[in-house]
Length: 261
Image (cartoon, rainbow, N blue to C red; front, top):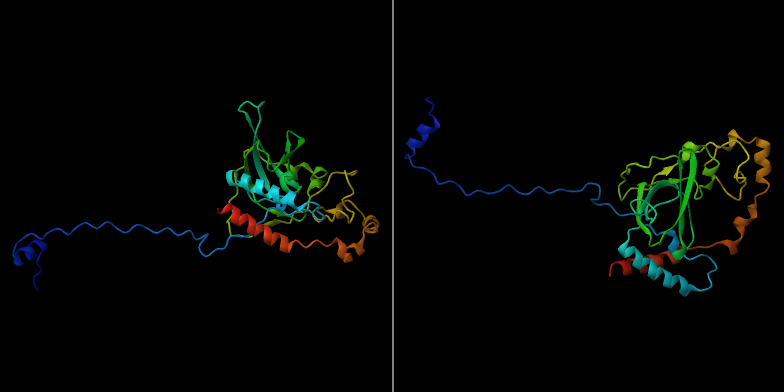
């Protein structure tokens, strides 16, 4: 059979010109964030919202929560734990740019209500530097979490007696991304200490430290002697139990209603 070119086929159909079809733009691409699709944001209640046990004036902490919520409406306070690496920018009238930025590892969180504080530690030029910040201080301009993680202990003050490498961080450290729905990673590292004496006897049960390599510095006899200072009967003392489950639920509901107004 004879093959016809497109030009000959056009002539055979009458030779007329076809009207051009109306231009239709391609559909817009739909971008789906796979990190958040079907994910549930993890629930986090900052510990300073929980009133201490034996509070004598509940209205005091209720009034403070109102002020804390108003502060959070205009200032972002991220989720962080002892062991997280953070950067805090604070107003400083004596600095060249009127601001001072410090990077360090959070070694402690303490206090309740508007008196909540946290401590950052870093080694700069061989010197250990620690700064304690008031969490709701109006002088704080930004709080950045460069690396969100937990440690084996809630109190990392023993890093003062540890080798400097565990407290040394780059002042220009870049943030490490983490998915908002992922579990907070737990760093199970156990640090090596400087030679004794230490600032405290961290091996004693009252501190309940899990993040130190005690086997490198203490003999079995000394570890057994330290265990004798413990009070194992206290875990059976019901008067020392402080169940905050119901309090946390009420405060969580109160905060969400206030922030969504």
